[in-house]
Structures are given as structure tokens and as C-alpha cells.
Amino acid sequence: MQGLTHYAAGMIITVVVWHVLSDKIAEKRQFFKKAITVGTISGNLLQATRALVIFFSAIIVHYILDDLAIHTYHPPGPEADWGNLVFAVWTLGNIAIVSPLFLFLMVWRDRRYLWGLFGSILIDLWDWGFIKGLAALAGHPVFPEAIMHSAPRPLFQLLAATTPDFTRFQWAILIEVLYMAGLLAGWLLLKKRWPLPPKKPGHVWPSIILVVCFGIVTCYVVSSILVPIYPW
Ligand SMILES: [Zn+2]
Image (tube, rainbow, N blue to C red; front, side, top):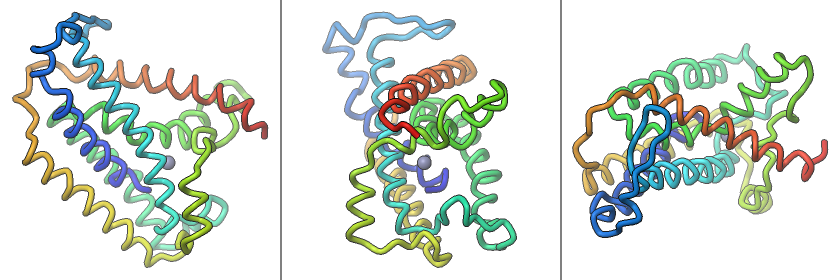
């Protein structure tokens, strides 16, 4: 799926988790009031729990959306045709313009979406960007290609066995546009129903550094676990 589809899911998760793990919980339970400090960021256990639940839920939902991508236009890697205008505009437009711009605008507007947004595209950044960079730095492959996407995918296998594969049909872009629109509309409705509490002042950069470090460690550990399970 494209970045915006994943982001919308991460934003829905953020609103739901902020509603379930609300500030009222910290008032009731002493445990959540415990202070916690990481670098220049200080908060309490409730804030840390919230960030982690959002982050890992966003990663899991990424897999589900990628499984559903079998019904949308995503030609397999070797068939990617950059000379094809529809493929080039749809893919490049999403990767180079819409995804980074949307991420920047959302995080700049409200940094509480950072963990959900970053978690929602983390394994794409790792598999399609970071491990290639690592390999170039090391001079040899550090992890097999697409290692995070190689985790067991029972839903994908079920969909592949029971439903048609539209990944080579350009018209299936419309199906993903429907997913994007539906998820964004769902986020807007949920946000209206369960608004986030007023923002507290603070800088976004320490949180960005923390979430990026956390993402790298998470993917490194999971990739290391997956390598012996999936010997290429
Ligand atoms: Zn993916």
C-alpha cells in the first residue's frame, strides 16, 4: 500500500489509543504516574505506554494493509515499469511528494501523531531504504532483501488462495483510493468523536530522534530473529 494509506491507519490507531489510555487513567492508577526520562524527553509511564502501543499496533496494521494490497495496483518489483506514465506518476508521486509532505505537515501540526505515523511506514523505510544503505556502507548485504516483509503472512496466503490478484491492473488504483479515502474519513470521524486533549508545548525534534532510534533497534532485532528462520 502507499504511504498515505498506511498513515491514515496510524492516525486512527493514535486517536483510539489516546481515547482508551486517556489522561484520566493516570489519575486513577498510581503506576501510570511514575516519571520516566529519555534524553531530554521527560514524561510518565502512561505517555510511554501510549507511544509503544501506538507504535507496535501501527506496525502490525502495516502487515494487514500490505496483505490487502493484493487487490490494488502494485506490480511485483521486477515488473515495475518506469516508462509507464500511470505507474511512474502513481508510484513516484506517492513516494516522493505526497508521503513526505503529508508526514511533515501532520507531525508539524501535532507531534502526538509521530509514533503512529512513523510506526505505520517503518518496515517500508527499513526494507526498501535503510537495509540497502546499510549494505552499501558495509560493502555486503547486512540482511536479505525485504526481510521484514518476509515475516509469516497467513492473511495474505488466505487472500491469495481465495480472491483475485489485481496487482498488475492499473484500474485497481481506484481500490486503493477507496481505502485511502475510507481510512482518512474514518480518522476524521473518530477525531471528532474522541478529540485529543489540548496540546502541551514542546519541541518535536527530541521525539523524532527517539522514535527513529527506537525504530532502528526494533527492525534490527526483528530482522536478526527472522534471518535464521528464513534462510535465503
Ligand atoms: Zn510494506
